[in-house]
Amino acid sequence: MRKKANKGFNECLPGKDMSMGLAKKILEGDIQAAARLLNCIEDEVQGTNEELKELYPYTGKAYVVGLTGSAGVGKSTLINVFIKDLRKKGLTVGVIVIDPTSPFTGGAILGDRLRMQGHSLDQEVFIRSVATRGWKGGLSKATIGMIHVMDALGKDIILVETVGTGQGEIEVSKISDACVIILSPGAGDEVQMMKAGILEVADIFVVNKADKEGAAEVKLKLEGMIYSRSLAASSTLSEWKPKVILTNALGDKGIEELTESVFEHRNFLTATGELEKRRQERARTELMDTIKNSVEKHIYQATSKDAYLEELVNKVASREVDPYTAASKILRTFTPIVMN
Amino acid sequence: MAEGKIRVVMAIPALENHTKGYLTVSGMLRDAGMEVILLGNELPERVVETALQESADVIGISTYCGSPVVFGEDLLEAAEKKNIREKTIFIIGGIFPPEDVPNLIKMGFAGVFPPGPGSRREDIISCIRNAIASKKPN
Image (cartoon, rainbow over all chains, first blue to last red; front, side):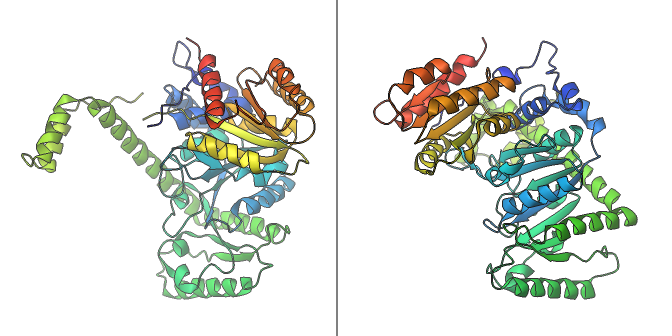
């Protein structure tokens, strides 16, 4: 077994009053303080919630764009040129790039950022590499908290790049205002595209590597799907028809069109009141997740060295008690949860 | 539940054309449960800016040719300027003259790993773990 890493040292140590004093610095634009708080969120350091509470009233200004797609379609490379275009328009940018944690060792290679190093000295671009740490759905548990920090830091637009996803990882659509799905030629036929999830959550499709053969065909098929879906859609569905954009990120082509589409989609959301609805839903998701996490943590802490639990485990194993009865017995012993 | 992970930024000085050592060591550190942020070829100032944004515990440099002492000086100076020199652990490995080793250590590198004994997987990992433990206030 791997030994627990020795961390939680100087940078995350809370002061006497349990306040790290990071929130105030972040609101003044201190990048280092923001970076530290991101660590604390990931490591679940005590006192982190206090900082987030202080920041929350200052959040909600940034526009969050989620970008997802299979491994190797060019998500990071596309984001690199996307950042460039957003900066040209005078916007400040926060970027959260997520890569998978090894389920065997707990370690991770975070290799998204190296495609974006051209922006490393730009103080208005804050990029953060994140490992999933066992979280499912293409995101990490800390993602929403990290969005809040970048928001409070004053970033106008926050890009969230998921891990290279397969077919069901659509969690990013729940935490973003706009969801961009990136594809590339040669990654399967229309049956792949029809599978649940991908088509429904996309606000904008990007077919990257458009210099490669087959890109136009992918675009056509996607547009066909979107068209037939709109024919079948009931009037209760939003009327936004996802755009399909051809890009060549390495050749810096098609990016302006992507930026325009993101803005156009935003105008649509604002005009129809859909943006407010999405954010309401996001607040609900976050609240429910926070409750769930707190309950889980509480149960984990309360039962980790519990003799009664061990006793019940033995009884369940020997078929003396069924797991359902045992679970309700345990739950009955819980005191109300106090969250820090 | 809460578990602090060691975060490492790995880079190669600009213009050097190799990845073998850098990828091998990055893989070792990942397998030791660390989160390794790959940067590829970079300049000292940009490595430091990245380490700051990533709130990295460790900066690791892989170098084959040229002048680790000069690069090291620039790196540490940039870190000083950005106020992260104290909190960051610096390690360097690769191929360089043996006489550079004491200079690099004196300069402030917690780990210097030229080819040969003393640069094994365990040496690098324990160097990082020990350096982090020694920074932990009591």
